[in-house]
Image (cartoon, rainbow, N blue to C red; front, side, top):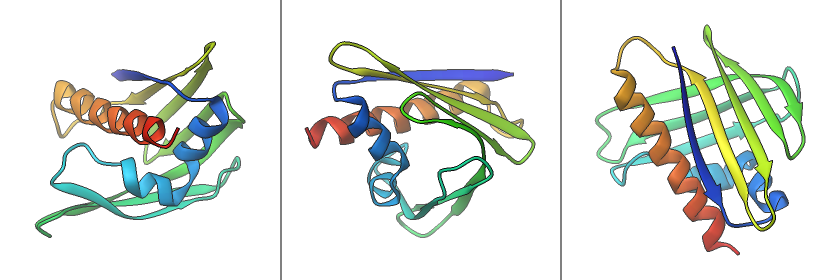
Length: 135
């Protein structure tokens, strides 16, 4: 099953693209709730390049790595990647004064679909807030 989440970011595409793909920015916005944080991030933004983010509970009780390989990059428009046996697609749709960021990803089987949707949506909402605060 594929899940889709999206957000509208009131910023120019160059700022949106940069914040989505810069490790220092990713560490600022890549969290679904205030009790989590991203402690490490790496990005090799090219087809065949790898990415990785380390997410941890702030109390140290749990952590995991989210990692994969980029399969297609269209600057300022599209990122496709594989992570494990799943795939993700990020679309950047430029509007007059904003960018719609839409993420499609294959659901995993451990957690309920709605929990996954809510988590990814929260992360994307944090992304929009992060970018807009820098404008």
